[in-house]
Length: 144
Image (cartoon, rainbow, N blue to C red; front, side, top):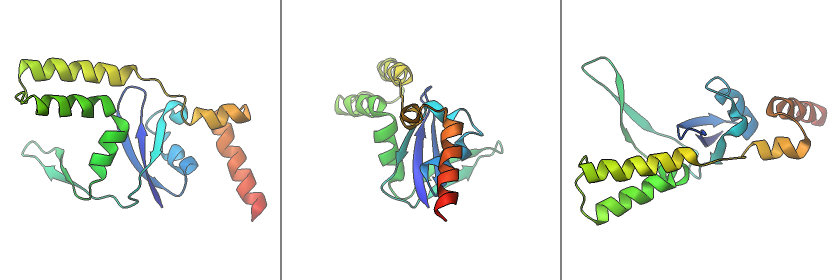
């Protein structure tokens, strides 16, 4: 199994573990259209994340335990990572007006990014992504 980071057009991020990129896209199809996502295979195929139960009955991300989060952040949201590095270097207080203004600009820049990512394979074949997945299944079946 491989761990993939999916970066959606609006800046959202999903983590998915699957046997292949095509299988990951099938799982991600339940969230949205995986045709225009950026799907990044992560170096570390193991994933450990801890959620804390809040007093309000919600689950809140408390920590990632194997460094995967740092890799994800760098690959999925480089403009936000750069903005944070810049703010920390300038000793800007977290949550200050200056912090919020700079982070808002970084978030807007991330949301404006465009990706033809997985669509590239589908376009090369002249297919929509669902058709590409069907074609891959057919090829795998024929090879067995």
